[in-house]
Length: 328
Picture 1 (cartoon, rainbow, N blue to C red):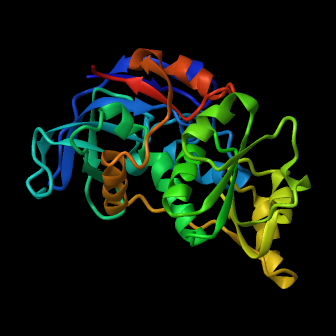
Picture 2 (cartoon, rainbow, N blue to C red):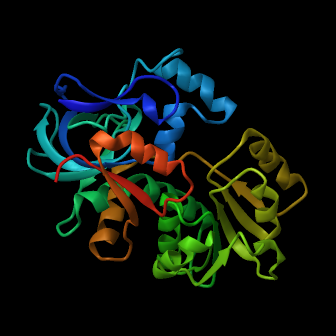
């Protein structure tokens, strides 16, 4: 089968077209013919290992110290059709339209991928009628992560949410889910993304290049921060007493600051580990089918141009998601 091979740690040029043997399922595996996958920020960070220091070493030990030897095909989310199932699989059958996350095996940048349904590995769910493979694939990571954080926020009617860095894949779903849960949503990003964020239901928008949201008198019950770094202090300042700062892009110093915060403040810093669960995917599938959320797709690239897709993902210009089309 054709695949994009992750040949080294480095820039987009380390993604090279190649071929691999077709996968063969074990008892609890399914083989998926991939129709669509994506180029996420997580894929670019994994490819280059531009990650916080406390994550770099364990990932090198897992994938390969000098170069990737395990997980040689990237891709954290996918959609396609089941073509083969192992003897122990009952939930899926050949021909089923599915989407999901293959887990630490990765592997979506290929014509076929093998997903293990053992507990704690891949999370796979059915794609509803009327939802395209592209929309489904682009809803997995952003949808699951934003759902995880907004559940921690305990949003509801009368509550308020600020999303800092709202124009990416996770932020764009957070805006929609925040509104779905009944919260008033402020979306912060650059000017070129504000119309898109209004279209997703944001009640208010701020162009961070011309306005500092800290200077407003408005305060929020929860802040989902996709930016991290120096934004930590600004986000804390706009929280109400008892408010929740949801740290989606943590650094080690900010994690330590978050642990110390309860010693002198009622505000809470939450991160937690988000689980890839099939039941959460099926919940998102229902919202997609009902039109209550949608994937924002900025650009589409054929799989062979995965390196170009990664370059665009790292440009800082993308709005929502970048789709890699494997099959029409």
